[in-house]
Amino acid sequence: SAVISQKPSRDICQRGTSLTIQCQVDSQVTMMFWYRQQPGQSLTLIATANQGSEATYESGFVIDKFPISRPNLTFSTLTVSNMSPEDSSIYLCSVDDGSSSYNEQFFGPGTRLTVL
Amino acid sequence: KQEVTQIPAALSVPEGENLVLNCSFTDSAIYNLQWFRQDPGKGLTSLLLIQSSQREQTSGRLNASLDKSSGRSTLYIAASQPGDSATYLCARDTGNQFYFGTGTSLTVIP
Image: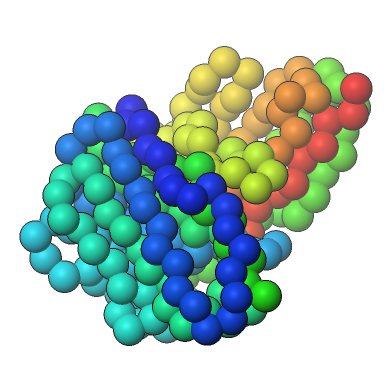
């Protein structure tokens, strides 16, 4: 299965600033996904990022708040813009690396964000 | 609404005990059902994936079952160990999107 890394692993940010989270995969993958996990909650899909096309955002998430880049098949970034304390969450990227025929997803270690 | 519910929300057992975690979903349309483990403050580790055509999958001390007609999946952990302490999440894959359950927090007491 793919090995996925994220940077930073954690950060503490001030209200109104922006943070860009990087997701690196050790193999080429078509589909990458960004999730948010708020404290005590389960995972919620933010958007799907395919290389060469605009990210597809889920209901409740907009590009101005969570711009995503997908410059190649091994890398993606998620920016959390104009942050507020409500954005404090763990942000996770995941991929379907194609090693299984059945949409099996593999996750990065996550980025723990605290907004003061 | 695509709901995935996990019961219990938290479970504490003595080491060596066998246990069952439950996952139920309101929509029977399913492509796969995947079980994950999440350690505190960490990402998710894939444990087992059950295809819609399968009824169960096994990996070591773990066994996961799927009953599409009743909208349920169970994760059976045999001979639990303190290292099994974590949050266990199930996720229903519709083929287009994953819907995650609320998780069961498991503590295995030495």
